[in-house]
Length: 258
Image (cartoon, rainbow, N blue to C red; front, side, top):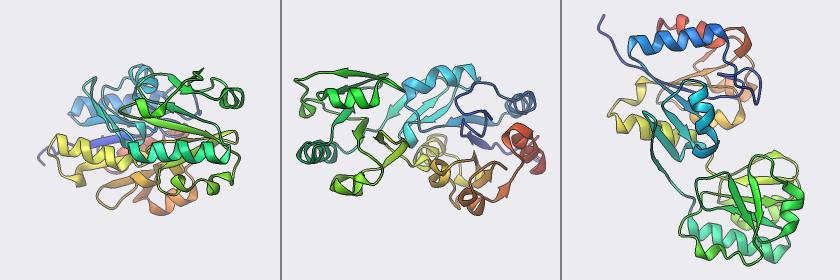
């Protein structure tokens, strides 16, 4: 049988790395990755994290390719191909609506670990977890030609008071504030496949969480970890074992890829 190159995309936490926030890939998973590379397959990380914040972990995990920024960023062979910004006019509307309704906000106009806010209330509420929060009282969001991410300090349920959030993509990781950022990893997968002029059917995605739902589409093979949320399992073509029980290796052997 002639070799057919597959394009594998792996979520990080709960998929490649069993422990959330960890950096350790199980030995069996690591060996399976090496076998895929030896055969000539394409391997990439698919993460919601920004390229800047994920690049170190990407190297640490042994990957040169990455879909980052929730699908809007692409790194191939260690080179940043590009990051698509959020719709600027909607970001300006979001900032105006937040100020009119008393919600503090922050903005990330560059690919870095810094977010800017003119309201110390946001800094007090969010701190510097995930990114460094810098207060600039004279901040003017209109001065930025591009906006990669925004953040809004609001309690669960208060998002409904902000009309722009009915259009802009956002996700909540903690109760203090939300991330306004791209949330469709399938966009990045398609961009990679188009870059290599490869058919979508040759893509294979692995995931476990709700932020992987957009990546689980009919165009390619979708594999949910045994520890995945039920909604993702229902959308998967195959449900493998848990991440800490050799789930990736088990799926790769099931399909005959290693």
